[in-house]
Amino acid sequence: MNSEQWRAVDDYLNDLVIGPDEALDAAVASVAAQGLPPIAVPPTHGKLLNLISRIHGARRVLEIGTLAGYSTIWLGRALPADGELITLEADEKHARIASANIGRAGLADRVEVRVGLALDTLPTLTGPFDLFFIDADKQHNPEYFEWALRLSRPGSVIIVDNVVRGGGVVDAASTDPAIVGTRRLGALIAGEPRVSATMVQTVSGKSYDGFCLAVVN
Picture 1 (cartoon, helix red, strand yellow):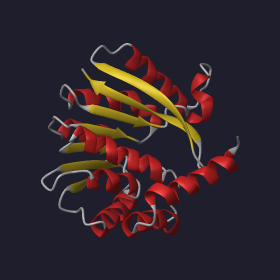
Picture 2: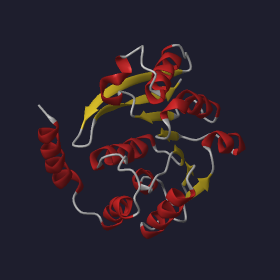
Picture 3: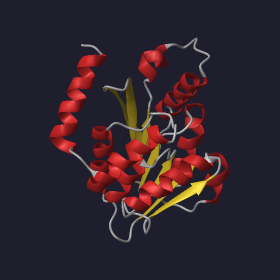
Picture 4: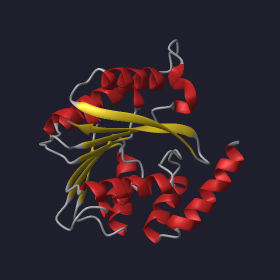
């Protein structure tokens, strides 16, 4: 197995279960057109977020890390008509692009983009939220997870992306802030009695990584 094969399987699966989608495709195109980093979740992972939210019946969702709004659209589409999604984005340019993509997807009535550092915005929010998706700067993942717990309720779902880091997470000597933050998150979750959690490795045409799925007890 190699990245070329992973990419071929990705293409097959995307064509099979995702297909063309005007709003999502426009969000992907905006990343390249506006010079944003190509770090959004793959289509099948976006669909997984959507399905988890629908299965859970989430009505209030908090996303930390918006970029161009690709995962935001997947999560927003899972909400009922009176649902609410708040997404936090530190970069004003990213937030502006995301807002346009969210509006194009017809979700402006239930999705709010808040601009600013997440650790400054989180104390201003009122919970509980039913589902959290954390996909921002990895060095602060432990703090984001702790805030998710504060804003949760029993049964809330917390999903954290990019917890494998191409296998780098096993390197206890790493000084990479993303790996250090991810390892701190793992230690936090392992010792946190308020959640039941797992971490799953994933591969795609973009990367070898993984995600954490936790449920508040």
